[in-house]
Length: 113
Image (cartoon, rainbow, N blue to C red; front, side, top):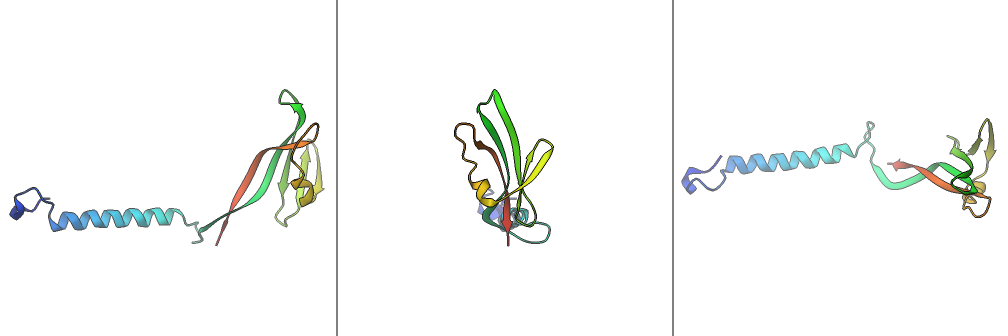
């Protein structure tokens, strides 16, 4: 819409209000998309919940394993068919080098408030 009294080129007050409403609705939609279903918001902090490691001297040879954090905070190493419990200090040691495990893919989960 244009305001005829202003020569037909300026937007009318109704059009300006509609634009403002659209902008406010867009902001509200963006904020709502940050909410989880239960109304919580992300904190910007993340928890490490899984690690995929490679053990070997090259990507063409070696062995892949996964290390997963359980709901109680403990860790489990999955090496083929033999899962075994691990400590947090063992997870922090996955830095690679030679024939030791090297963190290859890290999986994080966002913390919410």
